[in-house]
Amino acid sequence: MGLLALVALAGAFAPTAPAAAGGGVPGPLRSGGAAYGSAIPRPDKHPVASLLRVAPREVVAGGALPAIRVRLRERGIARVRARVVVFRLPGSRPVARVQLGWVKPGARVVVRWPAGMALRAGRYVVRVHAKDGRGRVLARSARHPGRARIVVHRAPVAAAVPAPSSPAGPAAPVELLPAPAASPGGPGVFPVAGAFSFGAADARFGAGRPGHIHQGQDILAAGGLPVVAPYAGVVSSTSFQAVGAGEYVVLDAVDGRDYFFAHCTRGSTVVAEGAHVAAGQQLCAVGATGTTDGATHLHFEIWNVGWRVPGGYPIDPLPELRSWCGC
Image (cartoon, rainbow, N blue to C red; front, side):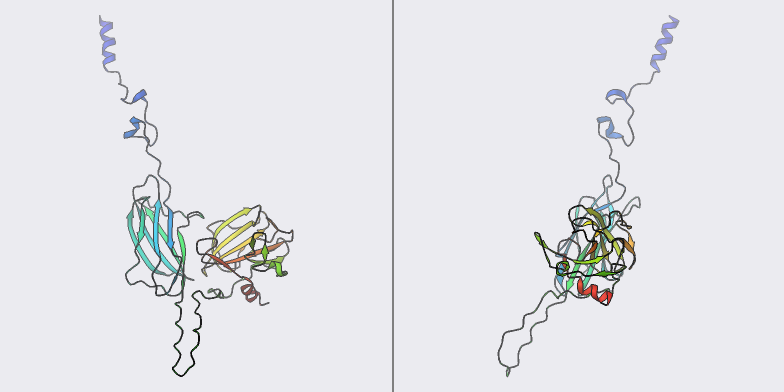
């Protein structure tokens, strides 16, 4: 009887299994609902601007300002503090700040411009800033840069009304969009550091190509010569396109335009996406990668508004290139 009593007493103090099925111990980041098979997701490391929509990207000074919509993403975080800042290019001095306060990730937010706000003619950058409760700031990438461009054109000048003594005639047409002008950043650095030529007519902007037109200027030069930044800026993209541009770099420059450098030597790119570069700093080297006739050269493009973004468009680089080299 003494032995049976001892066994019964030991059973009375044995630990009981958890109520959850299987009696297992919850794993990492599991509590509460873990007993029912649901796990708490691991939070993202940083907030991301999954949407920054500016429409339209081109407006006229004195007219309506574009609509701005923002959506942030950060899994596992309940709220993120955000603001939108607008800069006029070139330069980094804000012309407008809009505090969005604490916003819920996944919710679309309509940005309200400050009362009485007006933008004069020029180029602008709209940039989203965000910080979560842990102090983690917005992560930027080529896919989700968290910034967008606005171009504000001068208002068209009304045609003068002729004096009564003047003979009646047709009014002179008024252009809404000005012809491409020199960079607002002033003279730039020629993009090839070495001897070069501009080639023949097929190397020019607008020359015919199968299914499209040439959107840049070819600069013929020896392979391996440094390709450098015309202006300071941020590298927005680096990649390789086997059929087409080959190894290429895209620079988002401080003058408000994007610059595209293609057919670089394979593996010669010395900058990474998001890198800040100075005018004259090397980006890659002259090559003949991608679709070319085999002759080493730099394919060079200048884009107003932005490279291959809504509202962006290329312009003829040759006048700029000639002014930079004085040739």
